[in-house]
Structures are given as C-alpha cells and as structure tokens.
Image 1 (cartoon, rainbow, N blue to C red):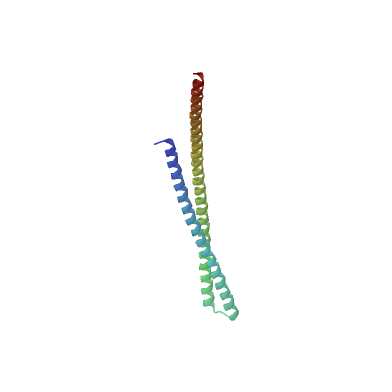
Image 2 (cartoon, rainbow, N blue to C red):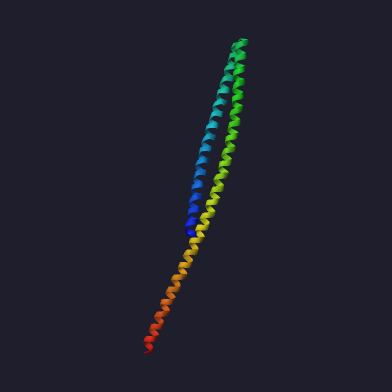
Length: 151
C-alpha cells in the first residue's frame, strides 16, 4: 500500500471518528435540552403548587391538608434538586463530547493538511517532470534543426 493511500485511509478513519464524535455530541445536546425542559416543567409545577397552597391558606386550611401540601412541596424540592444535578451532569457530558469532537476535528485537519501537502508535492514533481520532458523535446528539435541546416 502506498504512502498516499495509507494517508488517505487514515484521513478517512479520522473523518469517521470525527463524525461519530459529532453524532455523540448531538445526542448529548439533545439529552441536555430534555433535562433542561424537565427542570423547567418541575419549576413551573412547583410554583403552581405553591400558589395553590397560598390560595388554600387564604381560604383557610386544616392542619392535615397543610401538612400534605408541605410534604408534597418538600418532595418537589427534592425532585428539583435531583433535576438540577442531572442537568449539571449532562452539561458536563456535553462539554466532554464537545472536547472530544474538537480533538477529532483537529486530528482530521492534521491528516487533511498532510494529504494536501503530499498532493501539492506530487503536482510539483509532476510539473517538473513534464517541464524536463518538454525541455528534452525542445533540445532534441533544436539539435535536429541544426543538424538539418549543417548538411
């Protein structure tokens, strides 16, 4: 296998790795949006339930119902805390996935740069070879013309 084809293969593998990292990042971002949405819904529900408690207190509430409201609000607060933690953890996973994608992109860029340099060198050598052939053909023609005039 030639060095060019090996380099092209490595570039293709790096592109695949970058694409996989991109898909993982997209999935992690989607999970982050879902976690943020769940947190927002819990916050909204907590506010609504606290308003219901305030309304019940204005209208008069028995101690057992008050205790039930407070217990439920406490469980909502615990759920909110867990949702905050889950969102923070998901944001960390997004950051890690972003970093992984950037590393894969840098690796791909390095291979692409090498491929470009190798292609440019190949074109330069090919141009030199063609120029040498043209020079040899021109020199041969001149020799034939001179030899034809010398006779």
